Image 1 (cartoon, rainbow, N blue to C red):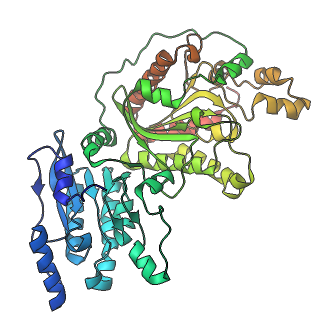
Image 2: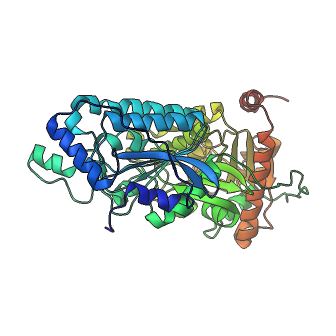
Image 3: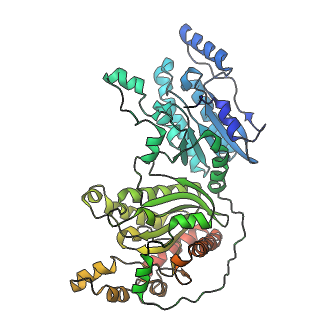
Length: 497
């Protein structure tokens, strides 16, 4: 690894030059025996700091932010009563002033010299951060080498977005403690930032030099500010009346643009996230903070490039979806869900890990989510995996997008005991975009000219513009009316008009 970053190194990397203002006051007194007092004195002399954490505020490209950073050189960044009180005071001040909060822990955990009193301080830190997030304020975390113990298990793991330094040791039980307790080394490669990212515990691994770019990008989305004009009245498009089976075939083209092309060509800002934060990461889905024509959202969707007949979405993917829902609700910014799936996994593992209950929870969460929602049927919409992301205030479909309880071949096998009747079943079941619009399942169709695979850039931009229009329209709808309308649309679907 490169040389260890000090607390002020991190602040210098992120904040505008000369903008940092300390919030620190003299540490509160704590009981200390002579040996501990000597340790504190030596740490102060060595680092020039009076505690293991510094707090304050500065600006990031002109935007005020609150900051908390650990100093590992001060008793291994350990947190005792005084350090915890400093952290909590800073969090509460950030909440009161409605400032986004950036935290950068590096710590061995609880300060052993203070014992159990230091240990339980993590409770009040976690509580303060929970109140901050409940106020709809962003909380970003940058984990530095090393971050372990109670710090990782409290305020180091509560970020809306959590990234870590490359090669950092990040874990709950420090390897030295593990070896002392169990008489053997902790397995290699487990407690690393890269491994935690691969397993969906954190959102990314970021070089320190890139923090100056990542933080403002994230804040532009997380603070929910829209900053571009969007034409709310586009020219209506004629949608050709083509057979449903034609749309099914076109939606299966290998070169059809998906959610990655939507982000590449239509998003004006994006910050990719990863996993559930609980040790699951499904490669068939994608989650990102994003802006379309300056309209912020949490984007979650099925990634056609990560799917195949052998690799389909499992329950972990839906738990990622629910993380995205919670993130959008906490930050009070819209959720956009993208449907483009071959179907959910049909496997022993998926059944045992709760696929069906996760579909049910997604449906329940989306119908009641307390933030604007837009769903986009971008391509294939097969089965419960598609239905799980469908409920929204506004539902859009690409011209050749479709939605069905099974692929038409499956429906044909049930009804006709063969797959040759698939085109007829596609027609009879009303799965194509024009049928969905007629039946009130969707609200608008995004044209393809004539097929998205032949115009990936133009099509992706058209989808982004349609999303932005819906976000602008929903921003003016009161929350209570939005909730009533959302519930009402599904209450009356299929009933006589």
